[in-house]
Amino acid sequence: MRKLKYITAILCLLLVSQGSEAQVDRLGEDVQYGGSISGSFGGGDNAPFWFTNNRYGLGPVENNTFQARAYIKRDAEADSLRSWRVGYGADIAAGYGGESAFNIQQMYLDAQWEMIRLSIGQKERPSELKNVELSTGGMTLGVNARPLPQIRLEMPEFWTVPGTRGLFSFKAHIAYGIYTDNVWQRHWASGTNNLYTKNSLFHSKALLLRLGNEKKFPLMLTFGLEVACQFGGRGYNQRGYRGEVLGQDVKLGGNILKAFFPSGGDVNDDDFSNASGNHIGSWHLRLDWKDKRWSVAAYMDHLFEDHSQMFMQYGFWKDMLLGVEVNLPRNRFVSTVVYEHLGTMNQSGPIYHDATVENPSQISANDDYYNHHVYGAWQHGGFVMGNPLILSPMYNEYQGYPGMLNIYFSRVNAHHVGLKGNPSRYFSWRALYTYEKNLGTYYYPVMDPLKGHFLLLEATYAPKKLRGLSFTAAYGHNHGSLLGRSNGAMLTVAWDGWIYKYD
Image (cartoon, rainbow, N blue to C red; front, side, top):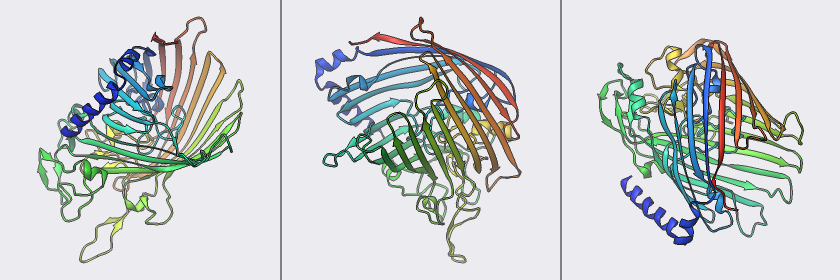
């Protein structure tokens, strides 16, 4: 990993140095600033679900919180007419009532040549092929947890393959990073003998292909694969395959090649070795019809944690996020409608059995979504890194599992509706409603289905005479046996502007 850092630093210097003087002069142009002050208050067992989730890890879990945020950035897209492009950003948040009093939320540098970008640092990245404001979020990598510092080589936009008449394009990325929740994990598991890890590493890659050209015909098909992995680092209170304690401080296996090509084994696999690290991924499929005045799309995000769900080992996929997004002709009422159904009840079935001499049949079921026997859960700082309807470890204390890093509520059947409107240039609104039924997990089932109703109503006003200033008021509500009952209000004042805008 150290060699990779050196190589990346050299590449970054080379990229920025191209066109030397002209490049440096541009760094002070098209620079934006902004900030916000937000407060939430209410009553109940915890904050309303949509106050907390899909806010890149900065949403409050408790009621009665305050947060101030400030950022500065220059988008690489400001150089869209040039071959070499440079972007950067810094974003900090501070307050009380959240999990941390101070966060460096973003700190990054983007250096791009043509369609290839090298991105270094911590940056918020939206889910693939989803509406960030209205969707429940991606299954593998969503917008629920705080971003990880990483080195990422990517094609940020779809690139049209020459000679295909604009009918075939693709985008891709490969990234390596590191988790930053060491302090949170140690604090969360303090006073117990619970599992936690330190300095674990991150890897992700994706390839998305697109067929169609909306300029020639309004139908387009996008499909591809997204894969991620947590590996390396050190583990505490690790258990062996038979439950024996391996030690308080155990070096965890894996390297960047084994993360890219899943192989090796974990320290507690015993005779039944799996690929080292916590591997997870999604198959994506989206079909778009884009008319001049309106559009409609249907999409699928299928989660897998091993070959049983990746390659339909037990028949056609039964677990996935299915969605429909409709963008209506311009009107004063509703501009966008999203409906999603999330089903994760099957997980290949309830039984897992490694092949033995006595019983040579391998049954790779009980996928136990987002859980891992070494790293606990697919999470960062208490928030799942995928879809928040699979409840984050942050809620474990409320559910009677204090200090546990695992996921206890992954078998989900949920319906979700998102609405957005823009009655005028200065006023907008959105509404989210989710109904979820949860059966726990196969290892920890619940006797009766737990149910939850989650509501968010939000309105934003940006006065014409106060350019760059906006006011947002939101109401949130939880109801049901899954997370209890709560009501809350959130008020936000935000501002943005240009430090220097090149005309």
